Length: 118
Image 1 (cartoon, rainbow, N blue to C red):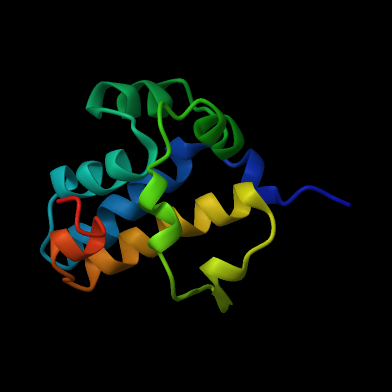
Image 2: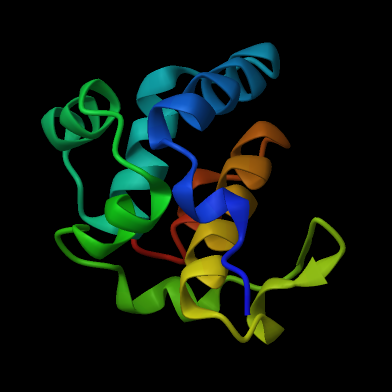
């Protein structure tokens, strides 16, 4: 089976789109970092390193310090697919991140986005 193109897309290529999306809705890049850090365990310095080294999303998630065990609580539809039903573990992690960014942009409370951890 062919690998999805998104797997080899650099985190640095999608991150600016996330920043634009949340800032357009009145949220800060710091809020975005909080959400991505909650999911992946990266701190701000780790995210900066991932951006500067242009790691692919596949590597970004493979090297994630600690995927949050509550990530499985992320449910809903993103890109026409229910995130909880995505079979490919890497695609599911990517869609978890997309879903969290969408929730942030929509103005959901941080405690809700972080599944009660915030």
